[in-house]
Length: 72
Image (cartoon, rainbow, N blue to C red; front, side, top):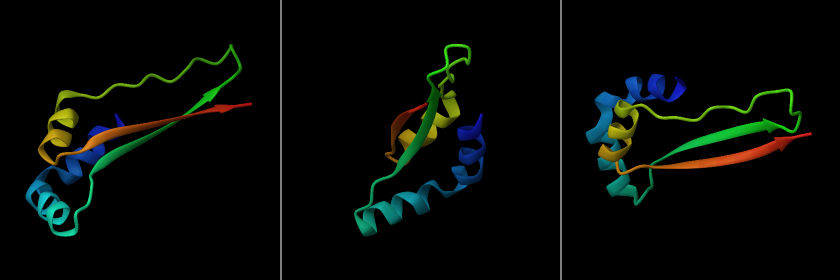
């Protein structure tokens, strides 16, 4: 899962991320962009997050933003 790969790279940086958020008044979020085909023969993408990803996002005060787009 892509989010897990990102979290594994950032998990040791929780204090640095939180310090930067506080210092700069920044928000932390995980941006997910889904492109969904209008072709009914193509399956729609699955979306899910593992416990380590959700726990990390909580530790850094992050939220998840999901954008969806239809491909014609």
